Length: 398
Image 1 (cartoon, rainbow, N blue to C red):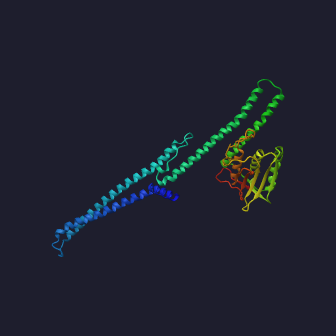
Image 2: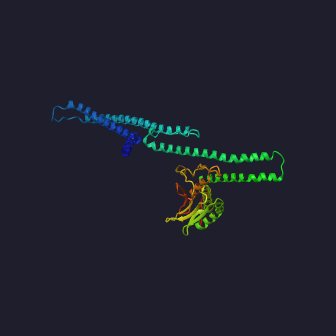
Image 3: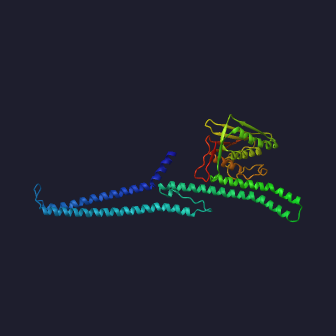
């Protein structure tokens, strides 16, 4: 069935092929010109034979034609031949010019449709698409690529609009609370201790807004490849021990155990600050969503090809497959019974993904009912490289 469908599509594409139409038209014009030329030559020879026939007395009889008559006939034949050739060439040139004009109009009409569609596109009309089957087969890849570009733009614009709305909501709430607190405080004279208490209560909100703005700026720089990577070859065990030690107290407060598993003398090429930030985001989520009394495991290992893998696993509610494909998007949060109790802007995992992209690595998640949820950071064996076209080139330190 698939082969028949492919054959039918190939035939339809062949019928719409502009190259085939041009080749067939040129072949037809050439055949007509050759036929016309042969006909002219035969016609002229026939005329000459009709002129000579009365001079022949009988079959087999030698007829002497004066040299002057032969020369005159030769000149007359040459003149008629050149006229016939000029007429045929002129008609052929006119036909070829007309065909070229029609072909150019056909090509430009498809290009004009592309231009008109592009002119209609705006932030409020990103649903415009080209119909590839309405274009010549040679322009079909261009139309499909144009449609795919519009699909990506529409998806990016939708995600950006949603991201902007989420950020506005996250900033509006603390600013509104701070404004109300300031208005109530200024409503009447208060003591220095009261003013101090109001300012101290506002500090967490300022810190949260500062972290949010810092995260937004980081994602913007990472997406435009403006973040410099200071990669070093660091011992994995030493670095993970330092990070785990920082989170042990938080795990104990929530009644959890934090275990560290390092395989051999592993090393990783990474930016120390960005690595700590990515692991900290994953550990924070793992501790936040782990079951009471369970163990959060931070592990590291090196594959045979030299790539390094850092995993954070916890026992908790599994992440549904439909959430796993979107969980690294900006401001995407898995709705659950504890969603309102866990503050955050939904940028943590997006930052992890951007960090791994800057390192040339990947981040993945594995979660299923009855199994631990595992987030894995995969770093390549070679140090990360940044395109020289970017504002900042990667600086590698050994």
